[in-house]
Image (cartoon, rainbow, N blue to C red; front, side, top):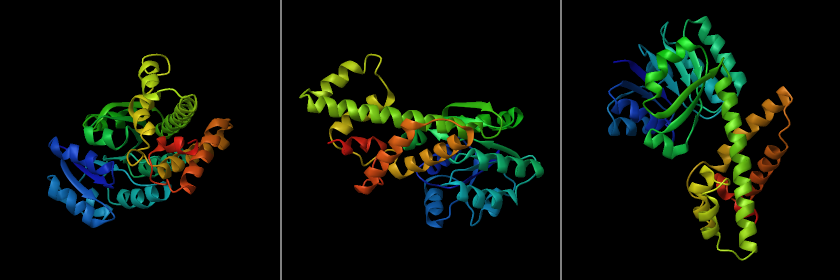
Length: 284
C-alpha cells in the first residue's frame, strides 16, 4: 500500500486525508496548528508529523491543501526539500496558475512529479468523498496519482499541462459567481412581486433555469440562512485570482468583477464567513 502524506487539515483537507486512511493508505499528516493534526490522529489511523519535511519522508504521494499562493510556496518548498525522487506532490489548494507552473518546474528539477489539482464540491463534497478535481500536469504523473485521488473524488480529470487545473478552477468560480447573483436577483424579484418564491423555485428548478445553486441554496436563501458552505472571504480570494489572470491573458470579466464588488458589500455588512449565497442580503 502506498505511503501518503497530507499537508493542511482545514475543512477540506481533514476529511480528504480521512478518506485515504479509511481506505487503507498509510497516512502521515501535518498541520501548522499541531492540535488539529493530533485531533485527526485520534479520529483516524495515521501518524503526526511536526514539520512538512518530516511528513513527506518516504511518501509516494504528498497531498497539500492550504490557503493561498504564499502558503503553497512556504509549505510546498519545505516538503519538496525532503521528498524522494519519483514521488508526486499534489496541490489541492485553489491558487494561481503561476505558482502551479513554478512548483512544477521546481519538482521537475528534483525528479518529483507535480499536479495542480484544485477541487470543487465544498466541505460536503470533501466529507462525502464526492469532490470534482481539475488537474494540470503530465499524464504519466496523473496515472500515478489517479487511484488515490478517486478515493475522495467523484470525478478527477487531467485537463492539460501544469496550471490547467488552476485555470479550470477559475472558470468554475466565474460560473458560480454569475449563477448565484442571478439566483439572488430572481428571488428578490419574486419577493417584490408578492410571489411564493418556494413554489416558483419548485417549478423553475425542473426547467432550463435549474442549477446546483438553485437546488441546494434557494431554500436557505429564502430562510436567510448563511452559516454554512463556502465563505465569502474564500470566494473573494478565488475571484481575485481569476481577475488577475484575466488581466494577464486579456479576458473581459465584467460580470465577475461586478459580483466581486457585491461580495465586498457583503463583507462590509459583517458577512465575511457567510456562505456565498448571501448575495441576496444586499437586495433585501
